[in-house]
Image (cartoon, rainbow, N blue to C red; front, side, top):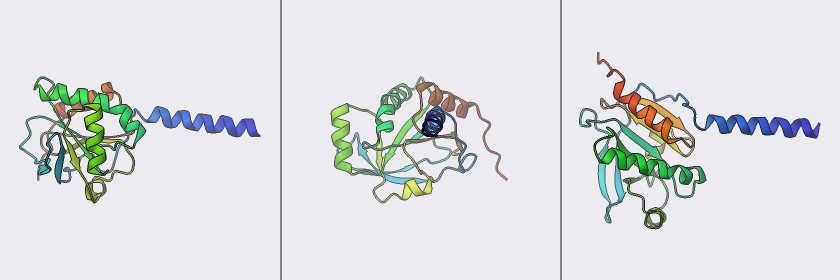
Length: 179
């Protein structure tokens, strides 16, 4: 019986691990993205508020990534997020990357200084953005089309290939028709 229970636990953990790279449809896909009005805490030394996303003002899809420096899967995924940001910032890749954290600003700045990340980080001090976006676990990423509609929700640690595929798919997706 003990062996059977152990085997069942191992199989369950393997299934969860396989799911971490998978697309998990969320309740927001196909809907207009909730607005973010949050301060940018890095790379700028002084927080400045930004409104993101603003439909119709972005020439490229957006990867909106919720994470935290105390989240182990988030830290393992950050080199991919940084690489996608750098690829998108040179204009050739065709996307934007913005990240959001609810963790303490000084902890985030300390992490960024130590790890030399380059992507912008928005501060969700009161957790309202996490709630509006229905973030229940970290990391969680959303791919937003140029028209402001959420194309994909990806929960758990992602690979560069899964995020790139979702971003490219958002660029090819037909814009939502407005009635």
